[in-house]
Image (cartoon, rainbow, N blue to C red; front, side):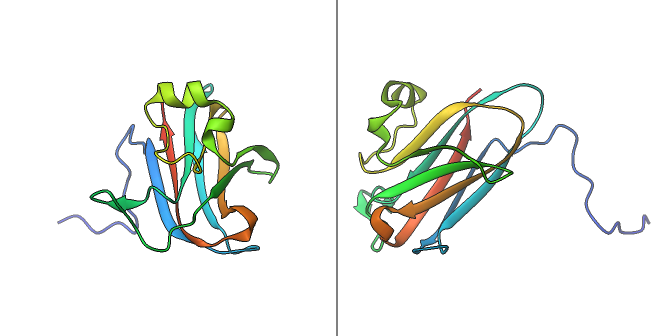
Length: 141
């Protein structure tokens, strides 16, 4: 019988392509933070969405969601890559073409080609509003 190993050995070529995290976003420093890593060689096309009003089930909005989410994308050194408040204000055509456009115009989305590295998505409510928010990251190609 083999002896147990202290940690599992990852399967070769295993990778997570799409991730999401839901939490209460507060004000000040108490915001929703989602980190992700772009790996491999070359840039990857990624969309990051910040949702609030469309979070729900069977067409009913979940109570307590953040009304107007704002999303920021930062590099590992903390520098701001880009930010978005209402997704239709910038990149509307490209976001719609991805098939992942948010359902509510107040929600946020960022799409781009990002180099390998560590990134942090920060979701907060516009004007320091609070509530349940959702950060989603999808690798498009």
